[in-house]
Image: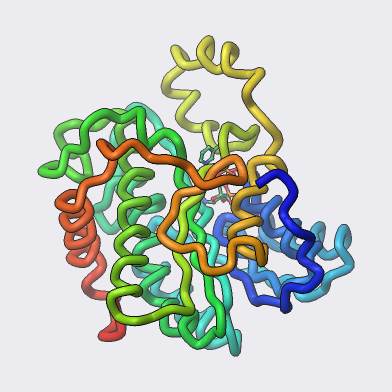
Length: 302
Ligand SMILES: NC(=O)c1ccc[n+]([C@@H]2O[C@H](COP(=O)([O-])OP(=O)(O)OC[C@H]3O[C@@H](n4cnc5c(N)ncnc54)[C@H](OP(=O)(O)O)[C@@H]3O)[C@@H](O)[C@H]2O)c1
């Protein structure tokens, strides 16, 4: 979709963007603030997040932009953050699960014991979406947009008996699987909502293409052999603003009203090779995340 209709007729939405303190998330928040929506920006660093909030307000003149802080690698923090959003805002129409991380060649775990990439890229969107769903369901037309990556194709066959890669860690696997799994989870959210007869919450996954952001700052330090590959890849790297386009489209455009359960990139629906889709894999990842997040899930969870 090259030229989505301008959003002038779209009612003003309340939109939460995670990881809005830099890169694609910052540009997503900026574009949505330009469209006049209420934008709830999430970041992990209070000063950086507030500075970006002030920058967006100054650039757009939209003062309805708000900053919140949470470390999404910790599920206890995800739960606290969800409660804060629920208590602070009367409504929530759109959740953009954008925050993400890529780490180095050595496996690291969070204070809660989860592999870091999996915690931020997979578990956090699972828990946050689940906890905010009741609020989203109150909206006449809600959307969940989750930022995955084409890297889902680079990690090889999923290793479902070692989901957090205790025995099989590599940076490429950790990142690629985390994005494959979060996409599977979003397919599952969509299927479960449809099965429950919920028609007013659309759940889609997007990929931004290659964008110049700080995502690889840590992974490149520990995998310098990737630098020559990156140099070869430079002509294909776009700006963060460009990378944000599909997130913005799926978050707010009337052109995609009613679209749900799809994977979009480059402003269009992507055709996915069936070999990447697995009902059994989806079920196992969903159940794994359910167990990992059990202390924080409410009885409203899907
Ligand atoms: N750039 C690409 O080419 C590309 C390609 C495919 C997919 N993606 C995906 O696009 C999304 C945005 O990434 P980006 O490229 O814009 O990278 P980025 O510039 O590093 O932005 C990532 C955002 O997530 C936040 N974040 C990271 N770890 C966090 C944590 N533990 N708790 C809370 N927030 C955390 C960052 O906060 P700070 O500002 O404090 O760092 C930042 O706001 C990610 O999901 C990424 O996987 C990017």
